[in-house]
Image (cartoon, rainbow, N blue to C red; front, top):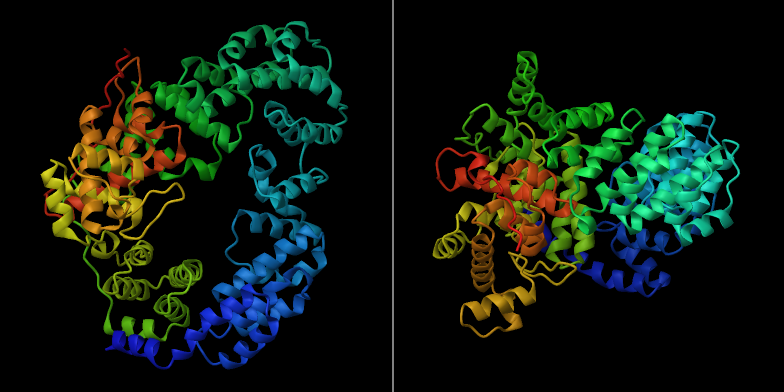
Amino acid sequence: MAVCTLVIAGQTAHAAEQQFNDALRAASNADLVLLDEYQLAMQNDVLGYYPEYWKLNSNLAFQPATNIVSFAQRYPQSAMAEKLAADYVEEKVKQADFTSAQPVLSYVTNPDQAESCAVAQVRAKSGDALVFAEYKDIWLKTDSQPESCTGLGRMMLSSPLLTAQDRQQRLWGQLRAGQSGQAIATAQTIGMNLSLAQFNQIQLDPQNYLWSASKKTAEDYAYLIFALGRLADSDLNTALAAVPRAAQDTPVEIQKYLYRTVAYIGGTTVMKNNFNRAVLNAFDASYGLVFSPEEAEIYARQAIRFSAWEGLIRAINAMSVNQRQEDRWQYWLARASEQRGDANAKRVAQEIYQRLAQGDDYHNLLAKDKIGQRYNSIPTDDQPSRRDLQRLAQDIHFNRAFTLRSINAPDSYINREWNWAVRQAYLKHDDGLLLAAAKQATDMGWYDRAIYAADRTVNKPSYNYRYLMPHRDTVVNHSRNTNLDPAWAYGLMRQESRFVTSARSHVGAGGLMQIMPDTAKLVARQMGETYTPAALSDLNTNIRYGTFYLSMIHNQLNANPVLATAGYNAGPNRARRWQSEVQPLSADQYTETIPLLETRDYVKHVMTNATHYGILLGQGAQSIGQRMQVIPMRMTP
């Protein structure tokens, strides 16, 4: 009954929301007069705040803070009020107008990284010096980041709360990354004078500089780190060979950082340089210096790759407390501890596994396997109550999302409102409302948003919404025709598209199984068919081609599901190149050391999904290990 109420509301009471798209066009044309008219006409509608939002946003940098605060107070805890406030703070920080931004801070409740750094700058300018302690990761980051974060790092240079050791760590990281300009500025805060001309000279021939470098002053050591970093960036093997001589006759901490330099660069360039045991040795040689969170993770992955369990324990111990407590690193701490010979370490490992086995995500499922616990049932399939459905019909946030979808508004607006609505329900621990939203979205065929809502339930998990199985007969039949496990096919499809048939990636992959056009052409040839671009948009053809291709690379890659899953995402040649040439690897080691973050996470999600789908498809007790077989050695030609 409540669902009908929502649908009727979308058709009648909110008919004026059809004006949304017209108002959006007016906003695109910067027609503020027309937006005034729409603001008046839509003032009592569920989407009524959009014309005013667009007006304020059209010249956001020049709005007084009172206008932003007024909007946020009239539309409290709304998606667009929060976005307007966050964007306003960013704009004002760009203008260095921290005073105007300050009254708006409390309305920024879900910032992304750029917005968070802008907020931090305002807080610091308002006298909150302790804010810098929260942003040590920004302070030490040397790869690309938003300008607001770069600005925050510059601001932190003048903070008395950052010690000489903090500044030295930042300086060394910048030298290692070849950031000569930033390094000069950081060096000045600790009384060092570095020369841009000298950096430029070293850049021309870093190897030659290393052979003749002076090693007497702090400045000399800085140039040494810079030179080794530049050499490692262009020729890692030569840099690894050069470290002992470069480190000779330098203080111990400089020696360690020189090893850290080549270790870090080697660990972050695996895609170019492949895995190299000497990189792990360099990390070991650098132990004793403080690790940044990023360095500790890279060290840990190198240790995992080479089954260096004591090195892995050292790497995890070097992490921050919060980092160390993540399920991922707890699992690997247990994996490393159980390799030790003493009974106490094995007991600690079992305790960690027992604790992790309470959950149902990737590392939780791996832990279940470690204690021999079969995964044979899903939690109770909770459903929303009648009252939950009634509350959904009355919820302003979800109403905005459903209304936007009903009038075919741009996805960016629809998804922002939906994700915001889900977040509000999640923050209130309102599982009933989340389940009602998941059910309503499922009934509409809006599968990706249904999964998004169901994934955020805590006490009332509904696996039939979290792991939806649309087009079941088609998926099962095509999977079986190619000798594929349909649970695996579903696990991959859920990760690829969340069952959005019209999904298109930024690289041109399309449909439920996100098939690239060149892949589709290959499959069509293999199947003796004529390829047509329209084929990928056809649900049946997309699934047929996708399952055929997955089966094909599965056969090419040792009939190993983990390798094939990595190959589906990153390409079979890459998946093969990541195999060890030295020894077989357990599947969890291979997966954790995949050098592409996207593929690493992709494999974890697909294997997890497949395990859950195995239960839902009635395949009996499940073990993630069934799909994570040992990765054989790569055979070199």
